[in-house]
Amino acid sequence: MAKLRRSRRPRTTLLILLLASITIITLDARGGLGRVTSGVKSVAADSFAPIRSGVNDIVEPMGSFLAGSVHYGAVRQQNQKLQQQIRQLQQQRARSAQTEQSLQQLSAVLHLPYIGNLQTVPAEVIDYESSNFAATIGISVGRDDGVQYNMPVVASGGLVGRVVQANHHTATVRLISDGASLVDVLYGTPGAYAAVTGEGSGKPLSAGLVPINTPLSVGELFVTSGLNGAIFPPNIPVARVTGSKTGVSATEESVTLQPLADLTNLRYVSVVLWDPASP
Amino acid sequence: MTARDTARVTLVVFAFIVVQQTLMLDIRIGGVHPDIMVLLPMAAGLVGGPGRGATMGFGSGLVADCLLPTPFGLSAFIGTLIGFGVGLATVALDRSSWWLPTVAALVASVLYEVFYALLGSILGQPQMLHVGVTRTALLVAVCNAVLAVPAVRMVGWALPKVSTEGMPTSMAGSLR
Image (cartoon, rainbow over all chains, first blue to last red; front, side, top):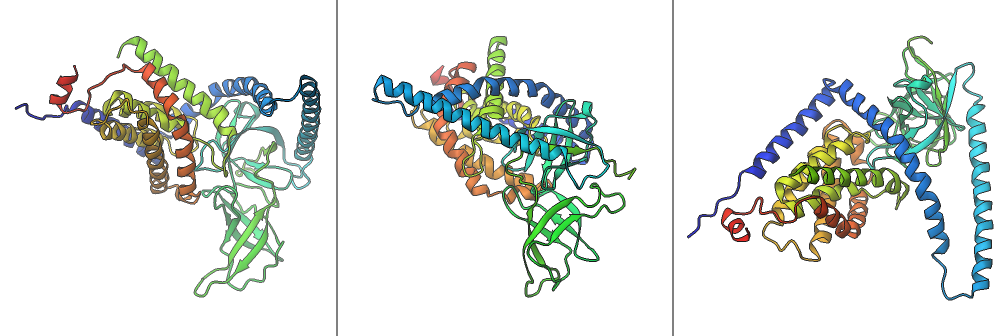
């Protein structure tokens, strides 16, 4: 009778690869590989940007063509032509509306009233939430445009997030709705400090460090505090209060907020060339 | 693996990452976009056995990690486990069954997304558990189930067709 004996090679492969993965994760988390992984990610993002752009240029017209031809059926030739014309006109109108909206957004990010004398770099949003597990966007400017790690990013309504990775020609921005985002803010008169955190994409923000029974009205504005050494410059609008309640045994108020920038429909943003070390 | 196989695997991984980073990011169902990178270790495990599944999971995971904002190496770690697991779980099954890629894609995708969120949260990214893991896992699984058959064919084209890797040696011998 043949003896059942499993090959050991796959298990050895598994062990080696798991050890390699754990080593990479650990070194990256501890900062040992931080520069290397950041460099690799930067090179990958820079190399991939033209590919992404090229593929989108090819795919978008094909998608429009396919979308336009989905409803073709047993209609007559003349009707088909007429429908096609109508569709083309509708597409033109939709494109015009889209262009107008883009123009409005671009114009808005170029004239941000709350930025004051700070220098900004306008950028197009080229990538929206590349992972289901992180609220981030990719933007069309990078180190070559003066963008650095941790710089604030704003849009027409207010604060959008901060740069978490600056590549040569692109950058990744962590939105304030991301669970790992933390913004020092100021609210009320004369002004109390709090911390606004994200709860995930599409969810309202929450504010911490607000003492219980603080009289907060719906619509109250939270702005960046600009504390000494803070990542964000002062007085950038962040969010408005949508609700607050005091838990039975809570030590602080539970406050929910709505971001002022429309984080779900970002086309253009501005990177504030702000260095916290030299305010 | 020959140089030709390596070139084919590289081409397939490249094709998957391009499609993921372009077409798939534009598709949003309930705020979730498909994640076809999960299909690579799954298909490699199915076509080439546990060892090749693990290797594909590691390699494609590292490539994906270069373009993701999540911890570096996380996709490689989970991909390695998924590739090996699929290869091992299907070792005694008829891998040419029509339903196997779809079922494997469903199960592998759910496990991948759940472990991804869990390990991410353990590695200092607690927000990864706040994104609706169940909804993400289910939507990704359904999308991948639909795309499983073409994915297995592509990976099958890149990898050698028959593998007895991971099988008990008595069974492997009978297949040679």
